[in-house]
Length: 251
Image (cartoon, rainbow, N blue to C red; front, side):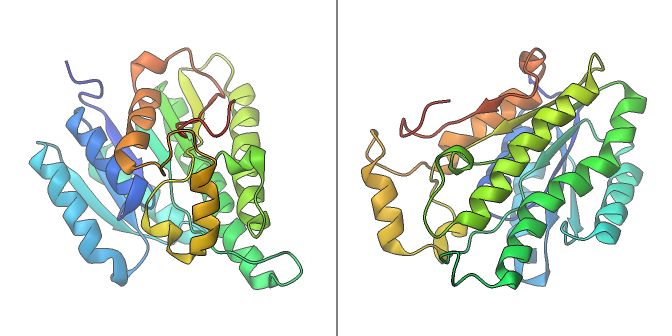
């Protein structure tokens, strides 16, 4: 029995990396998937994800939107609802990684990080949540990071955004109360995806040396946590943070 049979999911930042892996994995479990991507540059990769979703026997809907901005998010949610009729699963995955020490970090770099990695989680949830309430069903899975708790030099903006996601998820969970809508986080350890391209090699190597498994995670190591939290198996998981990280941090 597929865990997500007859469900419809929206995955932000789904053209590459963890988002792409999650979108395909949800489809393999029976969900139709709306695949959000940022711009024309990502369209080819997004189309490849859509093809994989369709190969799994599910409907795919490509939706371009900058999820750090309100108007595009509102249009995106409306378009997905028009296409699928509902959104049962929301995966807030869109994110970037840049690096600079605080004294050298520009305000623009800080604002971009908070906008894409944190503001987007609020905006998308804000517009999806009323529909989940009306349907009396919903699963929200937010992509955080273990660095929300550990911190990391050169990544103050990234750590702040990811800590904000965890705090947001916990507060939202208390608001949801006894409704049949759950919100949880996945907080991966360092994972080999394109998002790491902007992080210096020496920084990545320092992280790798602290992982008991001796390697960075792969997308296939992270995806099952998202599928679990999106499914009925996680019906008693509320406001929690699951961290597939190879053992370099414990939660």
